Image 1 (cartoon, one colour):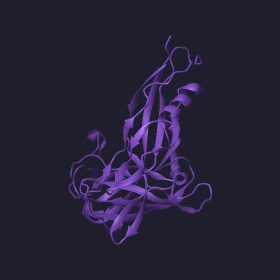
Image 2: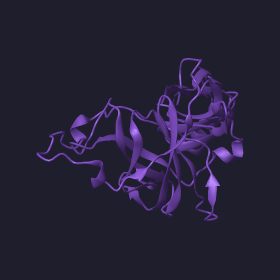
Image 3: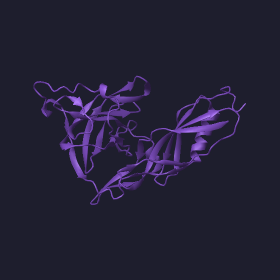
Image 4: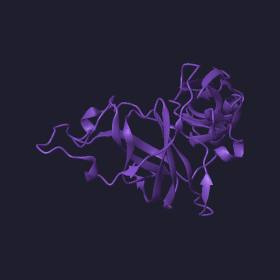
Length: 281
């Protein structure tokens, strides 16, 4: 059985943020704490007040966002957003969730709005603390930043036609973002660098006949420490064959990786990797 792998887009990484006089300093989060948070960010888009539509590439005060979760239990917490120069915090209260139509194991909230003190472009956002669905208490989350990118499907945005009487910010029930701090200068030249695969074992030999001559690809989520070493490998999409899934987890655990960085410091991270196995006959 041979393996060929495809790296999926790695957009999640885990770290904690420590407020100091020097700014936001990224530090590695203990492995046990990087497994689950009561909420994360499902989406965040810049919004144009005058046209009441999503916009790309322009500073704005108003942003829309949705909270995501792995359960339907309502959640409250605090979101952190960062521009190129500053960090802000925004509370969300009693977010309620419904399942995604194409993924009943994932849930998302209705849309919410927040307003910055002045127009700016947000680069990243993450949930800093949220209600723990098990204990019902507020708990600090590992940081899972959401990168704000241009809309790949502009046609999905609202109409950009300015109405005869332009809307104003007062029209929206937007939560006011609270200034948190100035960001330190990025002496390394990049706010975030994604983790990289240095070496993945090229093949694993074993026999498995439960799926005939071909098993479906395995999608694995690999959690890495700030030293780049694998902490945990979770099967996100099974091949339908236990031996094949176990082989994918074992292969990922034996791989070598380069750690992600955030704010010029090494950070724990998560990346998705697809293992495509086929049986030699």
